[in-house]
Length: 253
Image 1: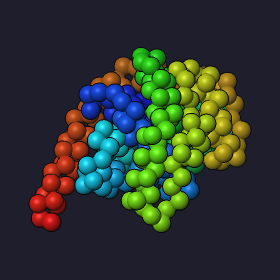
Image 2 (image 1 turned 180 degrees about the vertical axis):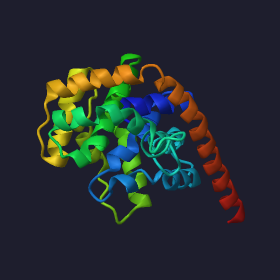
Image 3 (image 1 turned 60 degrees about the horizontal axis):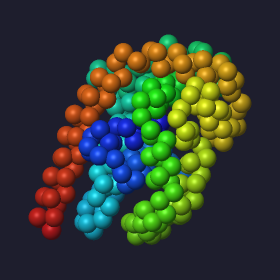
Image 4 (image 1 turned 120 degrees about the vertical axis):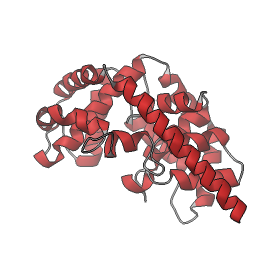
């Protein structure tokens, strides 16, 4: 999912908003690159949670991080990897009818079509979520919270001393790649153009992509919030299991 959607979901699960919740909810996406591939970046939630819990640090941040990725199973697991009896996640299932038009609009080979069509669905979700709240303000506040960014950087450098973290640099780069303002189909398409240029060196048709994003939002409007409710139950259970495992490990230790 896209950043404002992750902020929305983490706030709904944790029950409050803060810069820590915002930054934690999108951390896996900020880790991607410079030493972390997508899978690895989305599989660090349990490790980060346990490290911070052990050090009694960043209480909201450590709760928000596991809501996002694959380990433990967070929003992106159910959106990308597996949901209900679908072949893959919710966004991939919803993307099936968009695959052919995405190939055309994004100037990509057919084998990339379903993958990129699921991004179109994610942007449709982002459009709906972003329209319902001031998540732009949350992102700006978190990105400019120098004390928090510095504390997260110190934490990650301590956790992974051999990694090139440079977290403030990652925050700045990420902010330039995403739609920080309240999203529109045009702004999402423009940012997707930048992402596709950076990651795949290809030029998309932003007008066609914007139309697809609008259609994607319409296609998910009837069941997206039911998806969020269903997944929230699963993610809450996964985090509670993580917390129990941590306590058992501490007791054994």
